Image 1: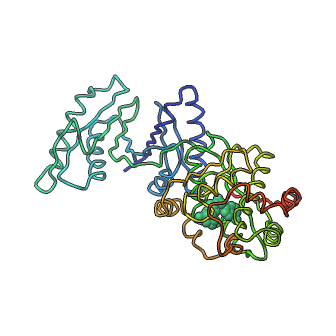
Image 2 (image 1 turned 90 degrees about the vertical axis):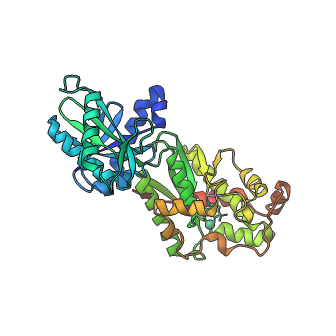
Length: 391
Ligand code: ATP
Ligand code: MG
C-alpha cells in the first residue's frame, strides 16, 4: 500500500544558511545506512525528504529510525489524481494506521496543485465524512476532533500525484553525523564506551576509536570483541578507524614502579596521553569516554580531575549522568549489548589492585609516577600503534 517514506528533520531546520549542508549530510548518511538493505530512490522536495524503497519497507523504516537527524517518519501512499483512487487509498491507510477504538481523527489537506478539482477544505470535509461512514460502527467508534485529534490523515495534492499518510513513527532525533566535528572514542570491550560513541554520533560528531590491549594478558578474543563493537558502530556511522594500542609494556612498568593503589589512575592518565597524541596528529577535536559518575573507583570526580589533567582537549562523557539501566537500554537499541557482555577480560580488569584509591590527589599521583619514564613509554607506544578500518 505504501510507496514512499516521508522523513522529517527537526533541529536541522533551525540552522539557517547551514541547512543545505545539514540536509546534504543527512541524505549521504541515509544512503550509507541503506546501502545493504535495498535500492531506494531519494527525493528532496518542499523541505522534506522522501525515500522510495524498492522493497523491505518495514526493515528500512527500522534502520531509518536510528539515523541521527531524523525526527519522525511516515509511510506514505501515493495515488494518481483520480479522486475515487484517493478515497479508496485514504480508507486503506487509515485502517492500517489505527487499530484502537474508540478514537478521534481529523483530515488535513494541503494543496500544492491549485488547479485540482476540489479545494483543500472540500477534500478534508468529504474524506472525513467518507471515513466516518466506512469505519464508524458499533465496534469502531470514531469521531472527528479538529482541535486535538488522536490521528491526522494527511493528504497532499501535488501536480501529478497525491500523497496520503497517517502513521507518524518517532526517529532518534539529534543531528546528522558529520556536522559536528571529529572525536576520538576510547573504546573498551564494555557496555558503556560503545554507547558513549553512539551518543556522540547522535549529536552529529564523526568518531574514530582507540583500544588499549595488553597481550598476552588480554586475549585475541578480547581484541576481536572490540573490533566487532567498532564494526557495529560503523554500521551507524559509515566508517570507523580503530587504533589498536599495545599497552602491555606500560602495564608492566606501572606494576613494577608504582604503588598498587594508583595503578588504575596512572594507567588511565597514560591512556589519555596516548589518545591525546593521536588526536593532535590526526585532528580529532575531542576525546570521548564511557565514564559515568560514581560507577567504579576511577569514576569519582576526584579521579576524573586527576586523569583529565594530562590533556587540554575537551573530554566528552556523554554517559556522565546516565544510570546503568538507561545505558543498557541504548546498548540494546544500537546492537552492541550482546557483544559487550561477552566475558573476555579487558586490560584493566587484570591489573586491578585490591584497594584502588578512589579520591586521588594530583600531587600524590604525580609522586606515584616519578619512577616511570612516561615520555619514553609514550614514544614506544606511538610506534606500535596499529589501525583497522571498519565500514
Ligand atoms: P566500559 O563499559 O566502556 O568498559 P567501564 O564502566 O568499564 O566502561 P572503566 O573501565 O572505568 O569503565 O573505563 C572508563 C572508560 O575508559 C571507558 O568507558 C572507556 O572509554 C575508557 N577505557 C577503559 N579501558 C579502555 C581500554 N582498554 N581501551 C580503550 N578505552 C578504555
Ligand atoms: Mg570497562
